[in-house]
Amino acid sequence: MIIKRLYEEFDLSIERILLKEYRRLKLTMAEMSVLIALFSIYKKRKSFTIASISRRVDLSNEDIGNAVETLIDKGFVSIKLEQKEGKEREIFSLDLALEKIEDLYKEDEVNALRTKLENDITNVITWFEQGLGRPLLPYEFDNIRRWFEEKSFTSDQIISCIKDAGDRVSVKLVERMLNQNALKPVEIDADLEEALDQIYKNIK
Image (cartoon, rainbow, N blue to C red):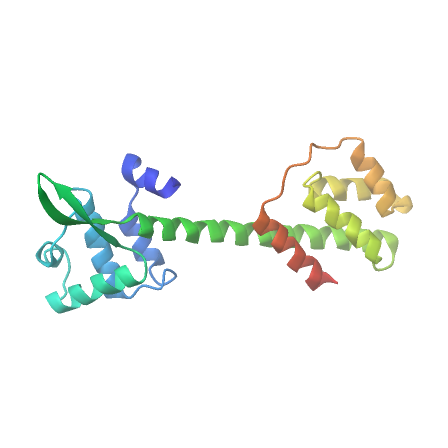
Protein backbone atom coordinates (compact mmCIF):
# COMPACT_ATOMS: atom_id res chain seq x y z
CA MET A 1 0.00 0.00 0.00
CA ILE A 2 1.66 3.22 -1.20
CA ILE A 3 -0.09 5.54 1.27
CA LYS A 4 0.95 3.34 4.20
CA ARG A 5 4.57 3.37 3.08
CA LEU A 6 4.56 7.14 2.65
CA TYR A 7 3.02 7.51 6.10
CA GLU A 8 5.38 5.13 7.87
CA GLU A 9 8.63 5.87 6.04
CA PHE A 10 8.29 9.46 4.86
CA ASP A 11 6.02 10.99 7.51
CA LEU A 12 3.14 11.76 5.15
CA SER A 13 0.78 14.28 6.77
CA ILE A 14 -2.39 12.25 7.24
CA GLU A 15 -3.85 15.12 9.27
CA ARG A 16 -3.79 17.44 6.25
CA ILE A 17 -5.34 14.77 4.06
CA LEU A 18 -8.15 14.09 6.54
CA LEU A 19 -8.86 17.79 7.04
CA LYS A 20 -9.20 18.17 3.27
CA GLU A 21 -10.96 14.92 2.41
CA TYR A 22 -13.06 13.93 5.44
CA ARG A 23 -16.33 14.80 3.72
CA ARG A 24 -15.49 12.65 0.70
CA LEU A 25 -14.56 9.88 3.11
CA LYS A 26 -18.04 10.32 4.63
CA LEU A 27 -16.73 11.24 8.07
CA THR A 28 -18.27 13.70 10.51
CA MET A 29 -16.07 16.39 12.04
CA ALA A 30 -16.04 14.49 15.34
CA GLU A 31 -15.00 11.26 13.62
CA MET A 32 -12.33 13.11 11.66
CA SER A 33 -10.95 14.72 14.83
CA VAL A 34 -10.82 11.41 16.68
CA LEU A 35 -9.22 9.68 13.69
CA ILE A 36 -6.51 12.36 13.55
CA ALA A 37 -5.93 11.82 17.28
CA LEU A 38 -5.65 8.08 16.73
CA PHE A 39 -3.05 8.61 14.02
CA SER A 40 -1.10 10.78 16.46
CA ILE A 41 -1.22 8.02 19.07
CA TYR A 42 -0.47 5.33 16.47
CA LYS A 43 2.99 6.75 15.85
CA LYS A 44 3.88 6.09 19.51
CA ARG A 45 1.96 2.95 20.43
CA LYS A 46 -0.69 0.57 19.18
CA SER A 47 -3.13 0.95 22.07
CA PHE A 48 -5.27 3.89 23.15
CA THR A 49 -7.62 5.04 25.88
CA ILE A 50 -10.45 7.55 25.81
CA ALA A 51 -8.26 9.74 28.03
CA SER A 52 -5.37 9.67 25.54
CA ILE A 53 -7.74 10.82 22.79
CA SER A 54 -9.41 13.48 24.96
CA ARG A 55 -6.05 15.21 25.42
CA ARG A 56 -5.96 15.74 21.66
CA VAL A 57 -9.55 16.72 20.84
CA ASP A 58 -12.17 19.12 22.17
CA LEU A 59 -14.90 16.51 22.67
CA SER A 60 -16.63 14.89 25.63
CA ASN A 61 -15.68 11.35 26.59
CA GLU A 62 -19.10 10.19 25.42
CA ASP A 63 -18.64 11.82 22.00
CA ILE A 64 -15.16 10.31 21.73
CA GLY A 65 -16.51 6.84 22.55
CA ASN A 66 -19.28 7.20 20.00
CA ALA A 67 -16.82 8.40 17.35
CA VAL A 68 -14.50 5.44 17.99
CA GLU A 69 -17.43 3.04 17.62
CA THR A 70 -18.58 4.57 14.33
CA LEU A 71 -15.00 4.61 12.99
CA ILE A 72 -14.86 0.88 13.67
CA ASP A 73 -18.32 0.34 12.12
CA LYS A 74 -17.36 2.36 9.02
CA GLY A 75 -14.17 0.37 8.56
CA PHE A 76 -11.55 2.98 9.41
CA VAL A 77 -10.24 1.37 12.61
CA SER A 78 -9.81 -2.28 13.54
CA ILE A 79 -9.27 -3.71 17.01
CA LYS A 80 -7.76 -7.06 17.94
CA LEU A 81 -6.42 -8.83 21.03
CA GLU A 82 -2.68 -9.31 21.45
CA GLN A 83 -0.86 -11.59 23.86
CA LYS A 84 2.23 -9.96 25.34
CA GLU A 85 4.25 -11.23 28.29
CA GLY A 86 1.39 -13.45 29.36
CA LYS A 87 -1.08 -10.59 29.32
CA GLU A 88 -3.88 -9.89 26.87
CA ARG A 89 -4.49 -6.38 25.58
CA GLU A 90 -6.41 -4.64 22.83
CA ILE A 91 -4.39 -3.07 20.02
CA PHE A 92 -5.69 -1.05 17.13
CA SER A 93 -4.74 -0.71 13.48
CA LEU A 94 -5.35 2.16 11.05
CA ASP A 95 -4.52 0.16 7.91
CA LEU A 96 -8.19 0.27 6.89
CA ALA A 97 -8.20 4.08 7.07
CA LEU A 98 -5.05 4.22 4.94
CA GLU A 99 -6.66 1.85 2.43
CA LYS A 100 -9.73 4.09 2.19
CA ILE A 101 -7.55 7.14 1.55
CA GLU A 102 -5.59 5.28 -1.13
CA ASP A 103 -8.81 4.03 -2.76
CA LEU A 104 -10.10 7.61 -2.83
CA TYR A 105 -7.02 8.81 -4.72
CA LYS A 106 -7.11 5.81 -7.06
CA GLU A 107 -10.71 6.73 -7.90
CA ASP A 108 -9.58 10.31 -8.57
CA GLU A 109 -6.89 9.00 -10.92
CA VAL A 110 -9.36 6.83 -12.83
CA ASN A 111 -11.79 9.76 -13.11
CA ALA A 112 -9.00 12.02 -14.40
CA LEU A 113 -8.00 9.41 -16.97
CA ARG A 114 -11.66 8.95 -17.94
CA THR A 115 -12.01 12.69 -18.51
CA LYS A 116 -8.80 12.80 -20.56
CA LEU A 117 -9.94 9.82 -22.63
CA GLU A 118 -13.31 11.42 -23.27
CA ASN A 119 -11.66 14.65 -24.39
CA ASP A 120 -9.14 12.79 -26.58
CA ILE A 121 -11.83 10.67 -28.23
CA THR A 122 -14.07 13.67 -28.82
CA ASN A 123 -11.21 15.59 -30.43
CA VAL A 124 -10.33 12.69 -32.72
CA ILE A 125 -13.96 12.20 -33.77
CA THR A 126 -14.34 15.95 -34.43
CA TRP A 127 -11.21 16.00 -36.61
CA PHE A 128 -12.36 12.95 -38.57
CA GLU A 129 -15.88 14.24 -39.14
CA GLN A 130 -14.60 17.63 -40.23
CA GLY A 131 -12.16 16.00 -42.63
CA LEU A 132 -14.74 13.57 -44.00
CA GLY A 133 -17.56 16.09 -44.11
CA ARG A 134 -19.93 13.54 -42.57
CA PRO A 135 -20.60 11.64 -39.32
CA LEU A 136 -18.49 8.57 -38.68
CA LEU A 137 -19.97 5.16 -39.51
CA PRO A 138 -20.32 2.43 -36.84
CA TYR A 139 -17.36 0.40 -38.13
CA GLU A 140 -15.24 3.57 -38.13
CA PHE A 141 -16.17 4.15 -34.48
CA ASP A 142 -15.10 0.57 -33.76
CA ASN A 143 -11.71 1.09 -35.41
CA ILE A 144 -11.06 4.27 -33.43
CA ARG A 145 -12.19 2.52 -30.25
CA ARG A 146 -9.64 -0.22 -30.90
CA TRP A 147 -6.86 2.33 -31.26
CA PHE A 148 -7.58 3.70 -27.81
CA GLU A 149 -8.29 0.35 -26.13
CA GLU A 150 -5.00 -1.11 -27.30
CA LYS A 151 -3.28 2.15 -26.38
CA SER A 152 -1.26 1.85 -29.56
CA PHE A 153 -1.73 5.47 -30.57
CA THR A 154 -2.16 8.81 -28.81
CA SER A 155 -4.74 11.39 -29.82
CA ASP A 156 -1.90 13.68 -30.92
CA GLN A 157 -0.56 10.98 -33.25
CA ILE A 158 -4.00 10.34 -34.71
CA ILE A 159 -4.78 14.03 -35.25
CA SER A 160 -1.35 14.57 -36.81
CA CYS A 161 -2.06 11.81 -39.34
CA ILE A 162 -5.52 13.24 -40.06
CA LYS A 163 -3.87 16.58 -40.86
CA ASP A 164 -1.23 14.93 -43.04
CA ALA A 165 -3.90 12.99 -44.95
CA GLY A 166 -5.57 16.25 -45.98
CA ASP A 167 -8.36 15.81 -48.54
CA ARG A 168 -7.64 12.07 -48.74
CA VAL A 169 -8.53 11.49 -45.09
CA SER A 170 -10.23 8.24 -44.14
CA VAL A 171 -10.11 6.00 -41.11
CA LYS A 172 -8.34 3.27 -43.09
CA LEU A 173 -5.72 5.67 -44.48
CA VAL A 174 -5.02 7.16 -41.07
CA GLU A 175 -4.68 3.66 -39.62
CA ARG A 176 -2.14 2.75 -42.30
CA MET A 177 -0.20 5.91 -41.53
CA LEU A 178 -0.29 5.18 -37.82
CA ASN A 179 0.86 1.59 -38.30
CA GLN A 180 4.07 2.82 -39.88
CA ASN A 181 5.13 3.95 -36.42
CA ALA A 182 3.04 1.57 -34.31
CA LEU A 183 3.72 1.38 -30.59
CA LYS A 184 3.73 -1.89 -28.68
CA PRO A 185 0.21 -2.48 -27.29
CA VAL A 186 -0.17 -2.23 -23.53
CA GLU A 187 -2.81 -4.11 -21.54
CA ILE A 188 -5.54 -1.67 -20.53
CA ASP A 189 -6.67 -1.34 -16.93
CA ALA A 190 -10.12 -2.80 -16.21
CA ASP A 191 -11.41 0.52 -14.87
CA LEU A 192 -10.29 2.32 -18.02
CA GLU A 193 -11.86 -0.35 -20.21
CA GLU A 194 -15.16 0.21 -18.42
CA ALA A 195 -14.72 3.96 -18.84
CA LEU A 196 -14.14 3.52 -22.57
CA ASP A 197 -17.31 1.44 -22.89
CA GLN A 198 -19.32 4.19 -21.22
CA ILE A 199 -17.72 6.92 -23.33
CA TYR A 200 -18.53 5.16 -26.60
CA LYS A 201 -22.09 4.44 -25.48
CA ASN A 202 -22.56 8.15 -24.79
CA ILE A 203 -21.07 9.12 -28.15
CA LYS A 204 -23.21 6.67 -30.12
